[in-house]
Length: 102
Image: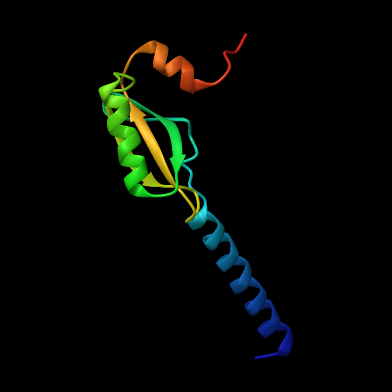
């Protein structure tokens, strides 16, 4: 094999690896503010340092009727856990949804 072909093969291999690495590491569904699962519309309700703190906040939200169910999932990096809330009243959704478009 000629040196130019070797360099080309290495460059193509590195480029393909970079594309695959970038696609695998980007959380496409986790970044959407309202991901749907069945009949439940999920929204981010907060970020916590530990899973235990996330679960406490989730149970508290159920007790206060802010949402009907919750789940704690790893955040976009290893530094926090994201609380996802589903269901609940429209007022609670309006508080966590951000500013209204208008």
